[in-house]
Image (tube, rainbow, N blue to C red; front, side, top):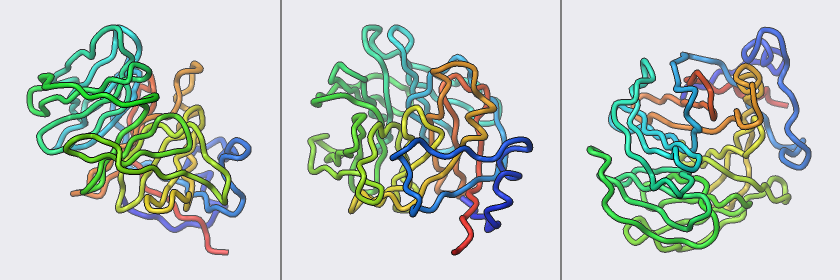
Length: 265
């Protein structure tokens, strides 16, 4: 994920030729917290029928989970053309949510059923299930733990082997709770989190839960709007090649972006 250092006045040009970035919703971004911009490094096709819930990069492929009752899937996707290489259906009475890889498996959540599944990453064959309390929204992992969001301002840290909860961290921006944490991604020791129904990604310190910065993707959200469900959701990081990917629900494009750092005060 290459960093680009430009003055704040140049951010609008990097993000959209016609619009400056909108401000985050009240109480979701403090004036004291730095806001990062972005530059599009590459654009790829994305299935515009996909209600994207989770996105990860592993071994040269994207893995994506989709939602909606009767249409929820886990799929392996070719980056270059957006083609679905293989797909598995989540039970039709469940609303699929986030995914994470661990070893040779893919682990997923459902929204309100309290049921998740383990899948063979190579074949997408379902291997087993697991249970949790509350809602399931997003998943990511460090090298030692799986991290789960549940739609609140808390993140749960799970034992990767048993998926039992070890601890929780409350996510705050200058002391103010940040609710509706959704899709998650582990990026160089930080947790990146979509905040549902906003064009913002929170950069979170996993130890303290403190939001250390925001990434404003308003311009991409505007370009891909068209319905109340067509919101930003989907972050994947290619650690080997240092690439950051983002997309949204029902978006026709997936983006590789470089972050543009705020100018020092």
